[in-house]
Structures are given as structure tokens and as C-alpha cells.
Image 1: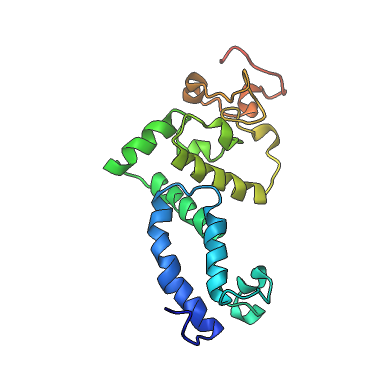
Image 2: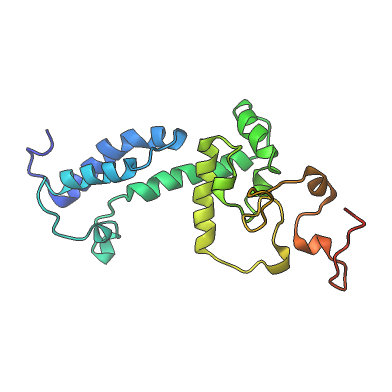
Length: 198
């Protein structure tokens, strides 16, 4: 229907955003997105944008702001990730809402979400979590890796992808309850390992 109309590039972007992507936002924020779905949607969007003709400009340029020569087309892959990451503040919000019962149950097994976000985890080792929450933590881990920093002795021991027992990360509730979270908590002032407090 819209292809028959002689829309400008800006008009096609408006149609994509208002009629195309708006239908996906709610569903993609509450469901797991199958692998390859973002690529499929992106292909269809750009086919509509270029009227089924060969693309004349690199896609990355179309995502830019208007002042940089772009058209502010939404990058689907980033949108899907952002919608999942938006769950983190909701899950961290105080209060005992009914909808938080299930995520709290699973996340508490790993020390809770607030603690887990500070860990050096590998999302693939968090297989005790439902896949929806694994994807949230996977995207958070990607974001965290963009801002790489050296934690040295403050590196958290639990859920750490660098410290494996039988090929799996560990979470020791006794240590967690005693406040033994990082390597620093196992050392005395002289830098020697203290075993007695464990």
C-alpha cells in the first residue's frame, strides 16, 4: 500500500517508525528474540526504504542524526538490546511487586541482581536462569565490556568466568553472607591470605 505512494526518504522513515517498528516494541521487550530475527526485520525495513531496489548508501550512515547526514533510522539490533536492558532498573526497583517474584527467585540463587551486575560473569555459565534473564545479563555484559576497566584485587569471586570449579562458576552463600565477595576480602593488611575467617 505505502510502496505505491511517492514518499520522500523522510516519509518512508516516518512510516517505518510509526507503523512498522511500533508493532514490535512491546513484544520484543517481553519475549526472547530468536537468533537472526533482527537481521530479518532489518532486511525487510531497508527493502521498504529503498523500494526493493539496490541500496545506494551504507546502512550505518542512515542511522546517524540529521546534522550528520543521516535519517535517524532505528538500528533494530540495538533497539532489541535496549528494550532488554530497560528491565534492569525495573528489576532493581524497591518493593515486593508480584511480577518480581519469579525473577527474584532465580536471581537470588546467584546473590541477587545488584550483586550479579558487579560480577565478572559469562552469560553462558548462568544456565540456572531462564533464557529471558540470561539475555538481559548477556546484553549488560556486552555494555560493561565496552567500558573495560581493571578491577585487580576488587574482582568479585562469585559468578566469575575466570574462576571455574569443574568448568562452572560458583556462588557460595556462606561467603556471601559473611561479606566475602572479592579477593581483597580474603587478604589481611599485609596482603596474605586469611583462612580463619572462612
